[in-house]
Picture 1 (spheres, helix red, strand yellow):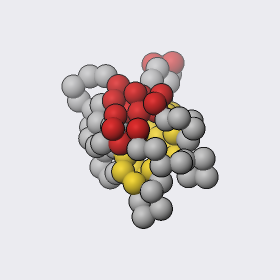
Picture 2 (cartoon, rainbow, N blue to C red):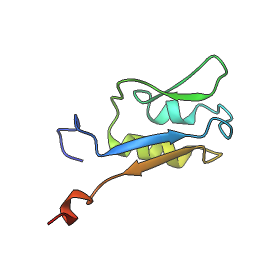
Picture 3 (cartoon, rainbow, N blue to C red):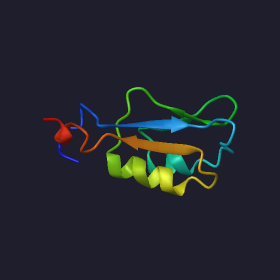
Picture 4 (spheres, rainbow, N blue to C red):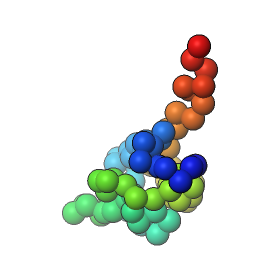
Length: 79
């Protein structure tokens, strides 16, 4: 990811029914995730972590409740 991450080419989806509140997402990407009153993951606004930090958090989630959606390369396919 380039130094200019203000126009992010990624987003995150959290399945709150699957989230068990382990907190690993917060450990790996504290500028993107936090817990709500039910101890389940929610997104912080605005997010401040890099794509690599968010990817690490997604991979660390023990239940697979977090999904990273990237749009990398989509615009390069336009004519």
